[in-house]
Length: 432
Image (tube, rainbow, N blue to C red; front, side):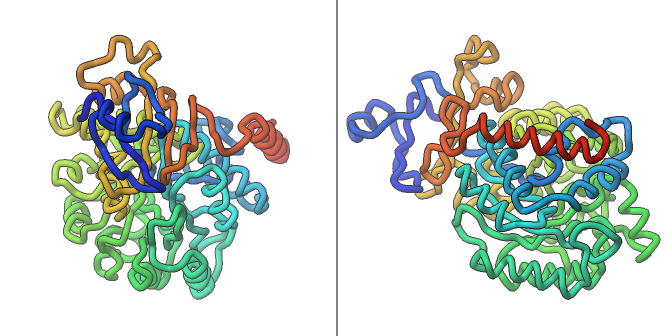
């Protein structure tokens, strides 16, 4: 922690860090963002977020139905109706909320029919992240297709975004729906595709026990063990959830250098068993690659990484009966530098260091949650605050949020348009 300090930005990069008064004398004509009592952090990383569809049903899906019903009776039917304009609108609204809460990097979860429109939304609001598209070859639903077609779509998206992951504002990942909705051929070739393009593969697996039962029935193996035997795992893979895994699978994940993204609000909201079966504490204890995510409106409800990190830390501490396993500082690490490590971006983002990309969050300490200001503001940030204390956000050296509002889009007009479409979809489903 640095006190009375300043960060200088040149173009998109952090160029200098030092004492505020010295920096002020050195750069007298540069504008200053923040106040003498502001708390400044690296930008937050949301490693699993559905940006399209669910937002139109926000807090409308009952919380007394199963996650399977929420997905296949609400969300999937909605996706069947979405246009390219709907995808862009939904993603824009989600990213505006994310940025206002300090989330500068978002890994989109891959349930997108129009990824280029979602990429445009990233650029429109000034956010950084990845895009994917629907990838599944089993069952029925939006964009389900033969294996070869799914793979060609994935490859084309990588080509459209320049192939190899880079420091561009938006890049493409290979994304599959996952669960048991992908053939062995699809997941194996998708993993190789990610390797070939030096990018990443992400998919959903085992947030609930149904995935485990399905793989045991079909292959005689638990899912992670099956992926290991197929040669799918590696440091290019980000597993979304991996809650219902056993000790052997935990070891395989760690040995392969594979990353896991935990979305604790989703598991609680959907009653998926994180408190009884989850092994994410083991991953923390063994210093595995792990990140945090907010998931979707039928699960996480809010795109707020501070709330998510506090919940994850609290669940881990209580579940292990160990007050030292995750502190507030660990929680901050998980949504910054450890999150960046999990997505393979720690050489560019995740910490405030000279030479790294300038993704920075400024928190106001004017609110009651900051009164009085703690001698350790990280404790206060995690345990007493949330994203609503964010005042300003800089992404790639550009000031994109000021006084809690977007500098890039007309928020009142965005809310009006989103509300109208949400009312249309709810009326279509007879839920208005």
